[in-house]
Amino acid sequence: MTTPRFRAVLDTMSAYKPGKTVVASDGRSFKLSSNESPFGPLPSVREAIAAAAAEIHRYPDPAAVALTGALAERFAVPYEHVALAPGSVTVVQQLLETVGEPGAEVIYAWRSFEAYPVLADLAGMTSVQVPLKDETHDLDAMADAITDATRIIFVCNPNNPTGTVSRAAELVKFLDRVPEKVLVILDEAYREYVRDEDVPDGLTLYRDRPNVAVVRTFSKAYGLAGLRAGYLIGHEPVAAAVRKVTVPFAVNHLAQVAAIASLRAEDELLERVESVVKERARVREALIAQGWTIPPTEGNFVWMRLGDRTPEFAEFCARYGVAVRPFGTEGARVSIGDREANDTFLAAAEAFGA
Ligand SMILES: *Cc1c(COP(=O)(O)O)cnc(C)c1O
Image (spheres, rainbow, N blue to C red):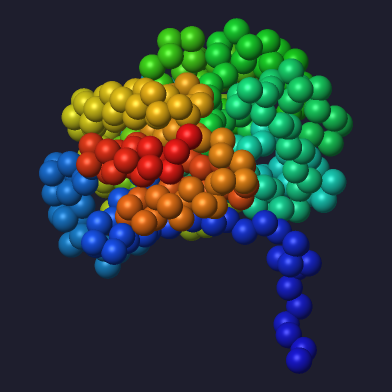
């Protein structure tokens, strides 16, 4: 049968596999597979969304003026330096669209965020994956991988799925080696969970570097994964390029309103983040006591390098109603949930055996 003609890359590109939900035979279900916040929306945010629901027969503000302004104010950056998208994964996609063409290369660590290879393929770019060293970005090797064809480099800090970080001194040394015509994106989806004081706020690095930009999201610490809002903060040419390739009305009205309400409720949200940080320490220590090797993590998740046992481990956890995120035969990433979810996961890990 003849089908319409599609781009060849559709047959070869890797597919993004979203985190699953599983249910145990007793009906229990804990989703620790997508690094979501275990908390429901704050009452004030929910009220703002409910009020905004009365206005959804109108298109959203295409330029998201109020939210852009709120972010510019919150981070003390010029309004023109902010670009919004429906989720930071879309910021990444738009960035790749701004620089991607056949032959152009994108460098990122591997393993890192699963969307990078998919979106690089889709943008027609060549992925240059630099293996992690001790579960951490090997920034020297990444700088060594730069060629004339390199357009963009992603540094995921903390890294998803390992939770490891790149610290200030090595990042500065790395940025000093990157030619100015190459864009460096600091993907800080988990910034709010970072407690290691040697990990720089990417915004301090972007300020005097025109080729450096920071990408963040309302999905993780802010608990708005279901509404889709993410943003880039970068110098005007970068932010303008990202805005240029956006689809009209990309960030919907409810997302804009909820994101603004969340910025207003930041103190309350950050208290919740703090409770996740405490649970993170408890979960990691319990796993180590069980005999597992768990890299230090600054995200809302832990990484277990299980090798061949990975699929079996994911199935075993599913029997407890716990969905983890397996990556082939490399390892599993497990999000930090509420206490009950974490305890159930720890029981599963113990029964499986390190
Ligand atoms: C979750 C995640 C994102 C994407 O989040 P959005 O929901 O699209 O904002 C981006 N980068 C990393 C590293 C992530 O883990």
